[in-house]
Structures are given as C-alpha cells and as structure tokens.
Image (cartoon, rainbow, N blue to C red; front, side, top):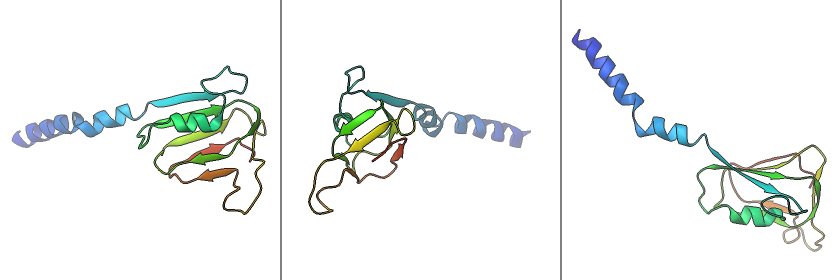
Length: 122
C-alpha cells in the first residue's frame, strides 16, 4: 500500500512541474500578416522580421499575402522559430534587384536556426 501511495504522489508531483506548464505555454504562436496593400500588420517582409524580438522563444508565423516583393531579406541568427509562408503556392515572389558579387547581392539570407519557409518564390 505504501508503494501505491508513493507512486500516486510521484505522479501528482510530475504532473504539476514547470515542464508540463511550459509545454502548454509553448503551444501558442504569434501570427503576423504582410500585405503590400496595407491590409496586414506590415507592408514589407523585412519590417515584419525586424519586429520579432531578439532571442525570441515562441513560434512566429508570418503570412505573406500574394504579390511581388522587391526586397532583400535577412533573417538574423538571434531570431529563431520563424515560419515565413506565402498564402498559396507561386503567389508570393521575393525578388531583389541588386547586382554584384554573390556574397553581397543575395535576395534572401537566412542566418537563423529553426526557420521554415514555404510557398515562396525567391
């Protein structure tokens, strides 16, 4: 009987640990919308990425409405857990009109880990 009480008590303590609480909190995500027509939170993709706090710990989902975005995008190393997504395949085009050597004229530079990109034409 003492063993049963011990395991029930142990189970109750494990269920109430901060780890279980943190798992519930981390399920939340921040949604930001980019729309060139001004109907989203931002009009430029880079402005949206810049708005993500440094050393971010929550998932940030950036939805980019269809259009041609003439920007140079840089996702810094201190902004993890970003998902950058067009709203439909082939609808979001990111083009940089820069020229020069390959290291200075990239249209999209991703220095971050835990990055996801989808439905983007770059």
